Image (cartoon, rainbow, N blue to C red; front, side):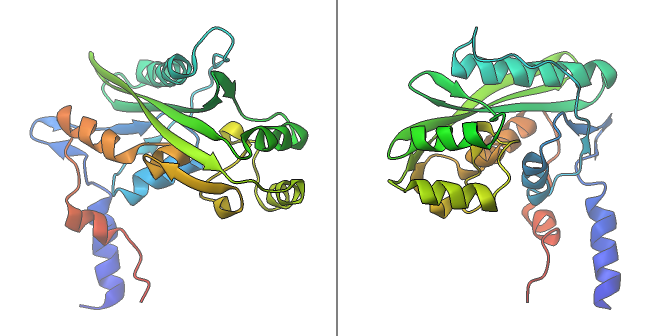
Length: 226
């Protein structure tokens, strides 16, 4: 079979993976505009739609970090679920915290630089709250990872902020983008630090009855780099 024909067949197959199982016609929706979460789910081989809800998210003033990420994930999930009541909706929100203080998306590069100085040489937490909702059933959980920054100079901070767009990222950095400039080590799920604890999400989807793609199907979605 010609390679081009095989690729077309693979794409057609992947376009319906996870959409039907028994009598249930599954519609999976990611309630987030995050390109990082979108890519993580695609790498897992899932077929899904994206609907980024317009909601006024809670800030850290009235919530502990762990409560905040779940509250915002629930807000996004329920907003989309109200429009698509029969869909299985994934809502997620990631916060960066240290010493009980939440470090959100910086308003400008000066705030981002201040954040990186605060994290320098210390350990901070990255928490992602996830809410899954299908009709009357819902599941909520939080995954926490830990990141230790190295003892870098202000010059490194300046260079990092020139290379990476950080204003849309919690804490003002992205571990997957030039993270070696800042990060000494991390503990816990790397995907969680990026924005979504994929392994746990897949496990919970399976528990809710959602038909996951097989390993073979997931591998078929990966590009041939030979």
